Length: 234
Image 1 (tube, helix red, strand yellow):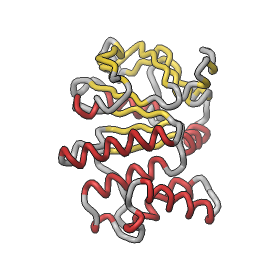
Image 2: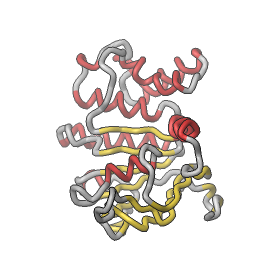
Image 3: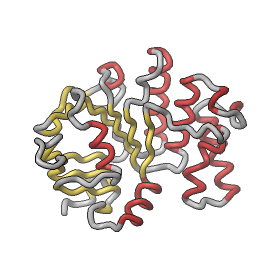
Image 4: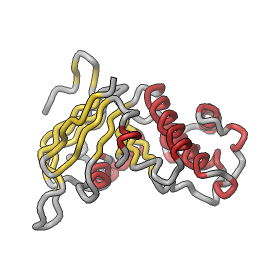
């Protein structure tokens, strides 16, 4: 097992020789090596079909890797039971999806509070943390609104608030601005980055857009051979 501690502290995420294939087909990716430290925000790019979204599912424990090992905040996911893996995901991972996945029958505040309810956070703390997060994303005045009453950018802010309200160690964002206009997309990307940094977590952004990727600390390209650096953002 690789050491959990470095001079910079404990890694949020470590991958060791991670591979994924389906049946006898060629692997989507193989031999992935990655260490993500607290405060790091990483963008992963690549052509369609190389397995970027699949990689996020594997990192979250939603799909099993074909080979290799994953550590999330020092805990190896592979040996965990399904229930333990679900709890680890619920506690330590936040998802932001391109399609939002905001629940239309819940208010903005109820959507954001949902991860805290699943973690059985006490009502008073849940209410305060929800209010604080809505203020952070500029939606405090929309707390009692429903998704149908919001713009696309506002709905995506709800999705970001929901992904971050439980202060996850790792945020996974899958093309979170693909349905938004460039100006709103820029605002959402800045918000996502700032909130990940403020929560002292780490984040991975999956994107086809070089402009979006440039908001990250570093950019990697995913292909069948693995992950390779594209550039480092100053």
